[in-house]
Amino acid sequence: MIKPVAVKALDGYRIWVEFSDGVEGEIDLTSLRDRGGVFQTWDDRKSFEDARISDSGNYIWVGELDLCPEPFYFEITGVPIEEADLKSLEPVTHA
Image (cartoon, rainbow, N blue to C red; front, top):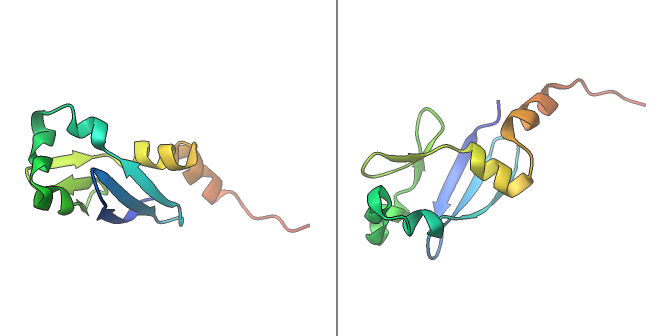
């Protein structure tokens, strides 16, 4: 199963993420921040920089804010994480 293995806050409201299959990339979360509500906690830069991965595999921040990793994987690869998981289980054939 493909899971997030690393996350790091970058400038603005961007994060760098890495998955267990080696996929990595940057995600811009500015549009979420602009929604306000629970995302206003990111007004405090220290709060945004506290991004980490929960035991369940979600990206989390202080204040019980959590985001699922699947949309990030899709944004980086264009492939749904479920399909990538299935491909990783396919047997390797040698010619």
